[in-house]
Amino acid sequence: MPMKVLIVGTGSIGTRHLKNLFELGHEVYAVDVSAENLEKVSSFTKVSFGSLDEALKIRPDIAFICTYSHDHIAPAVQCADAGCHLFIEKPLSINLNGVDKLLAIIDRKNLISMVGCNMRFHPAVSYIHNTLTSNLLFSKKLWGNFEFGFYLPFDKKDYQNSYKAKKSMGGNLIFDGIHELDCAVWFFGEPEEVICTKGIVSSLKIDTEDHVEMIIKFTSGAVCTIHMDYLQHGYSRRYKVVCENGTTVWDFVHGNIGEVTTANREWSWKDMKLDLSYNQMYVDEARYFLDCVSSGRETFNSIHQSLPALKLALAAEKSCHTNAWEKV
Image (tube, rainbow, N blue to C red; front, side, top):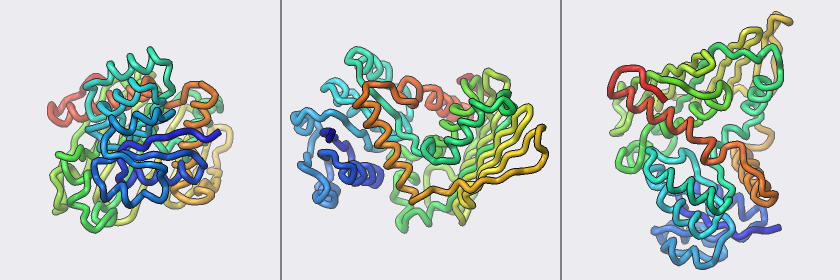
């Protein structure tokens, strides 16, 4: 059954969600302070608005919060207060200001919520999670290594004007790369403490950072290292998880996933490329969230459930300034 969906913020990610929801057959509305942005998506929207107050008068069923990372909570609170189920694009926020208020409204109104971490919908990431939770050889997790990087100027020609390059727009590589932190929490469980360093080693015209190095300790005793950068001239995303009796590795670019265990000492490999396109993860993510709303069931990354990843990111940010281990 088609739903009335409001897209709050029609930048690149908001436009992606808007078009996907339109193609899925839903009634899509948009709100943005930029008339130029709204004009670009006008063929996909039923009505567009210049203010959130006006947009909420249509009584949308769902709101997709796709504003800049530092400006997620205020519109989310306003939409939740109006009774909208909430999809908030990652990261949930870059601080905890207003999060408790938002959670209280969600609980009081019995709303369905989700923080959009689309990498969970990559078949390889889902496969690893299922392996770690269902295969006894992978039941005791020991160590992980996650690596993510790309060359920022290849992202867009005027990269220096993108949010990734500007602190004033919420740019911060730790939060931009929160997929890796989210997957680490999804795979290893509750984080306990973290030590992190970040900085600039390149000549990129940015006032954020171009690399991050992080070590996380989990309450289970497992340890995970994470590297993120804007430096590599070819896109890279690689995960490795070492367990007591098995190891699994994944390479996003080559599209394969490998496993080796104490029961079978030879590596086995599976093709885990995306079936259609990179956008398919976003389509599957939106479809999953809408199905949860329709059925009234909680998502697997609700705002409540996303807090450990956000608190981990905040502790990592603090560690960059204290040069010490920080509790999550």
